[in-house]
Image 1 (cartoon, one colour):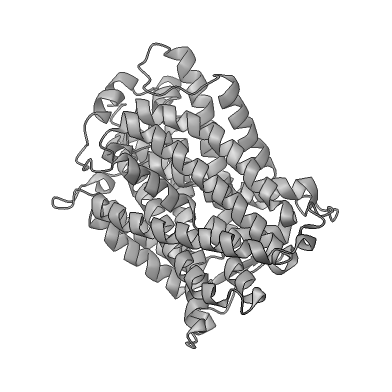
Image 2 (spheres, one colour):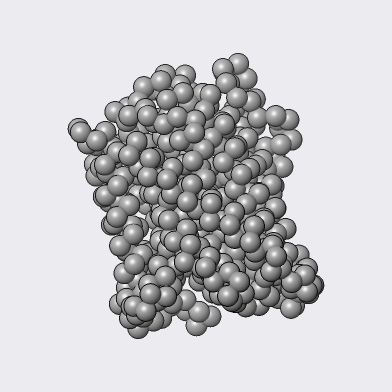
Amino acid sequence: MHNRLFRRKDIKIMMQESGESGGLKRSLSANNLIALGIGAIVGTGIFVLTGQEAAAHAGPALTISFAISALGCILTAFCYAEFAAMIPLSGSVYSYSYATMGEFLAWFIGWDLVLEYLFACSTVAVGWSGYMVSLINGWGIEIPNHLTEATLIYSSEGWNFSGSIINFPAVFIVALVTVFLIGGIRQSAIINNIIVVIKVAVILLFIGFGLSYINVDNWTPYIPENTGEFGSFGWSGILRAAAVIFFAYLGFDALATAAQEARNPQRDMPKGILVSLIICAILYIMVTAVLTGIVHYKELGVSAPIAHAIDRVGAGLAWLSPFIKLGAIAGISSVILVMMLGQTRIYYAISRDGLLPKFFSQIHRKYKTPHKSTIFAGIVTALIAGLFPINVLSELVSIGTLMAFTIVCISVVVLRRTMPDLPRPFKTPMVPFLPILGALVCIIQMVALPWNTWLRLIGWMILGFILYFAYGRRHSKLRK
């Protein structure tokens, strides 16, 4: 029983499989990969959570939170780059774990990745809805609240109905992105490239013009005093904010799921992962500094903080407000696109190994995309985005992401010891020090998340174990 559960997939066979497309079309260049990375990273984290986390946990010191998260991500990104170049398969961490830790733990992390991408996509769709409603209201069109808010709300008293029917704009954008993804990866990448140019231009405009309106008094105190509760300002608040905004860097992880569709994955995957992450970390820290300088952090607990900051400035930046909202809507759209892409490729990879039904790995004859898993992902994501509030979703995404990153860091150390002679087109520097440090940074941030988030993660994992023993173990191709 033990041997069957922890039977590992032969990494040499996996490397041979990575040379094949598996029915997927190899059409992504290095620039496409960098743009996909930026497209996935720059979104809800910069347009929504910058304000909400500053208001609730860190204050102006949110810049430190973004720096801590960036450090953890960069350390992990080196490990991702080594695996993505060595085993360029669509399964990302799931595939890496199958080779290093065995089938049961691979399923465990694969199920964690489903949580990560499913709820990340839903979270971002809710953020998109907030900016779209704000933009439409600015045109004098009112959308009823019962069509723009989550059906359920969570408070200290537990779950309750909000009185809203569903968050319709969030459902709409997920449906639209699903249609684009079914149409093919190359077309989706072209749309993403255009969106990335728009949103980076808008962010640079905000930074450039916002600098003249900074009031340094808003940065004092830079680290607000802790209120006596863990995670409420002070250093514990900085760590709590770092843990929640961690999912804002999720893009390079999603990028690894597209490895099987890259033209030259051994050369281009490390470049795409590291370059996109570094660019986005710099943009995040700069935007946070300008935002908390323009408006006092206590006023930033809104769904569209950058738009709110511009409105507070008044006539001087009024012309920029519609561009910011359009840039945010476009930017968040590209995040949904890449997160949906990642989610469907995880289903595809797990299904190819027999741990999920064949339905999830069927490829469209014309478009060469896993169309059935894309439709399934679209339906489930739309329902979650329409029903649940953003704060619950973002914390679930963060804990799932941090767990995945920890496992990647540990896997690099394990594989270096067990299979030191494998060809590695890209090598993580300073092993084992750098991967262990990356794992520690992730674990510290996981500890900073609230206990009810851990309970939801445990509940999700129990559901995953039931699915594995009921279906996956009996249908595993490796077992057969």
